[in-house]
Length: 297
Image (cartoon, rainbow, N blue to C red; front, side, top):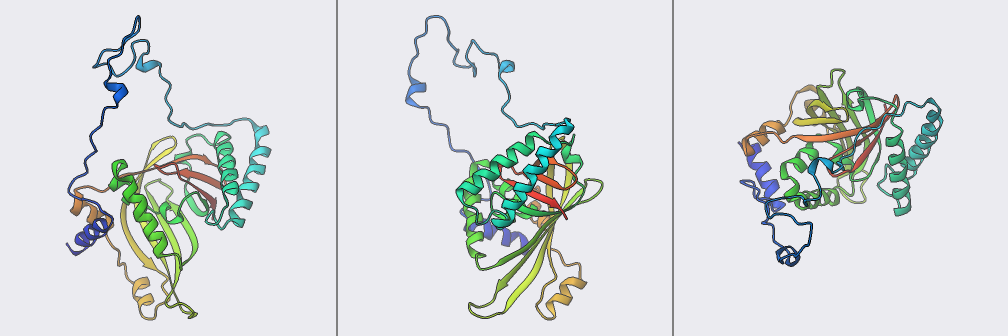
């Protein structure tokens, strides 16, 4: 009950009404409200498509997996990966990238996705991966924050973005260490590990360190897609005396998934899409098309 109340308070500070989410009513534009006179082609009011088009004829804009079977493209992929990893290292995983560098990374990622060598990439990502580049805040690769984004939904996307910006600003003084994802061999679980150290007081060489570990149930639903449901979050490897031994020796975990069930009746389902994976590199996108580049740990 206390955990549910805390989650409610957190969301309330972001301006969220937890009880319900309602879309703003659609307002008809003046152009849409005007009577249209047409000589030959017209649409009935209850017809969502113009009469000279059929819904089945419209091409889908949804991104799909490409599988490149040309062995000669391996050299091109290697060159693109080298440049991508180099840019990742000089921009601190993208956190200090200039606009020009960011645009270059987008171009490299797009080219690599078009040259993806692996069929069914979502089903072939087992193992340990370390984040080397993120087009947004790196903590958003964690199932904990993915769940917040899914819980708020598209109608409240701006509230989620504001909450993430607040969290980012509040942790500006912290130093992020390794950011990992571990995917089990059966594609049933994803574990996120986020190493962070925070200074206690400005000017003092004293830092609190730890690894935030979040687990999520995982299922492959399409060749490129996973669905995730967050389970729990815990802290390991703390350098605080006494607390470190307690946290490392215990199985103390905050049951985030159960908290969502108590608040809304269900655990939010988050979707991640992987359009590129090979033996050493993976590119995964979230619902907002932010991308995360991982290398094999």
